[in-house]
Amino acid sequence: MNDISALIIGYTVIILLILLVVFIILVNHNVILKKDSWIRRFFTNPLTYYSLKRIGSSLISVILAVAITFVLLRTNKNYHAIFCSAWGRLPPETENIICNAYLARLGLMDSYNVTHILEDGTQSVETIYVDVPMFTQLLKYYYNIFPIPKLVCLRQNLDNVTGEWSCLEESWTLLDFGTSATFRKGIAITKIVGDTMPISFKWSIWSIILETILGYPLGLFMAKYKDRLVDKIGKAYIIFVDSIPGLVYYYMFLIFFSSVLHWKTIYEPNDPMTLLPPIITSAFGGMAGIAYWVRRYMLNEFSSDYVKFARSKGLSENKILFTHILRNAIVPLSRSFFTSIIACLVGSFFIENIYSIGGFGGILIKALNANDFMLVQGLVVITAIISVLSYLVSDISMAIADPRISFTEE
Image 1 (cartoon, rainbow, N blue to C red):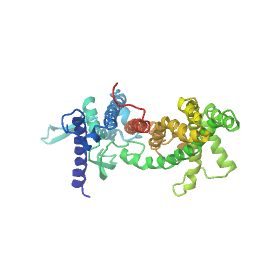
Image 2: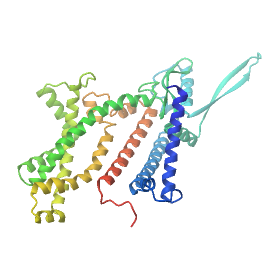
Image 3: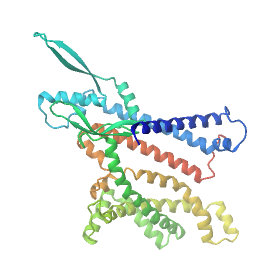
Image 4: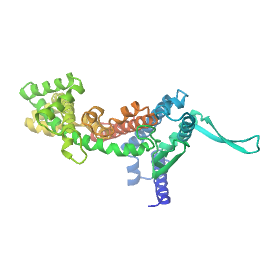
């Protein structure tokens, strides 16, 4: 696919999505398609309109998060100190030129040429840099991160002598969060995220699956056999996990894997078995929380009227437990389940550092240590988008799972 085709397809998809949103709003306000039909019933479904409103409110949250992050990083007008402080020592005659060129590329400064006539009649061209107003910078940043096709430089090279940037690799992409200044100098932030996020997701998703497989049955049996042996063991484990700091808990597992089981505890991309320690460490911590909430919800359901009615009809305890109670108890947990799946994209800072996993989780701290504020800004915005998206998906999934939720105003 060539560049023109990618551009046409990208903008076409965006235009169609905008038209779809406008169509849904007009149908729900009886402006068009007033006659009853399956198309109207589909687009006027309360869940459809509710989902659209939740998406709209989520977009507003993302816009505010971007603005706050953007302004906080630029409150200090000394851009040289913020964005150029960690480059290392450069020749004094070129340091200012290089930094100004970099700031201009970030959109923080504008440059224009001034021609001077020297005494000997020759001309000298001087490049003048001036600050760009913060509001203009913010609008440009919104354009860069708005999901429309744009040609982005994935790898740049800085000439330390002339201060000129040259692009080594270009690609069409939807998002542009800028370029890393120090952490991975000259590499686009979207490329850094694209390289690290799949690594975090690969081990985190298996951790979520394992903790769900272990946590739900444990909570179920703890509720069924309340105050008996399995419940006491489960409560002891939950208290143990909650009472000690997470970092201590993680290192206990690390010592167990390395000293007792003699497993490899350093992640190797070509060895899938090295993912087992972080997966198990995370899963056994997460299953405690799942078991606790499953037990709590199920015990609440045991005292419900429909359970008493089912017992009066002579239904067995297992029938009541698995057919009625478990179904209702799982509904509130569906929200946290989908949130956890999307959270797999960002991984875990502690676990990824303990097991030397080069995933997304540890990048933010490394970027802060490297004074790479452009990367910090991009990571904060990406994390905010993922958080808002996870809550959006969890709210909609819970609305679908629980028929008792009403979407109409009383």
